[in-house]
Image (cartoon, rainbow, N blue to C red; front, top):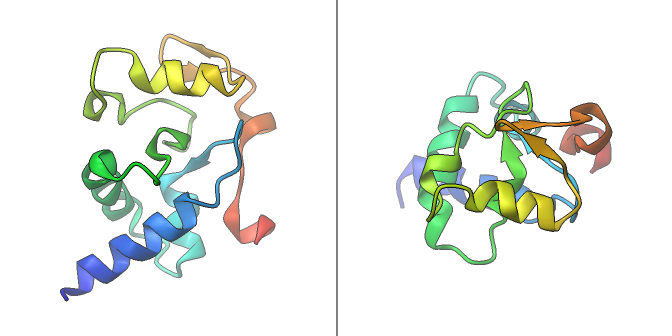
Amino acid sequence: MKETDNFFEKVYAVTRLVPFGRVTTYGAIATYLGAARSARMVGWAMNKAHNLEDVPAHRVVNRKGLLTGKHHFDGTNLMQQLLENEGIKVIENQIIDFDKVLWNPSAEL
């Protein structure tokens, strides 16, 4: 197993813990895993998670609450639809009241 595969599995484990109706960021996951400068690598893990049904990749956004990974979901608005189904409001790819729905694994776990 390559080192990146192990890191990706850790990313998926944290992502599975993001509660329904909440979101986290690439950076928050990286920081929680002790790799604060690896937000981009968390993004790569999310890109590969599209075929893992038990990983809620739609709940991982950038540090400003933008749906930067939406192009990795089938259809043009699937990521937004999944978030809205959980009660999260999104306008023009931006989560509204981002600070209220943000889940930080370093503080919550």
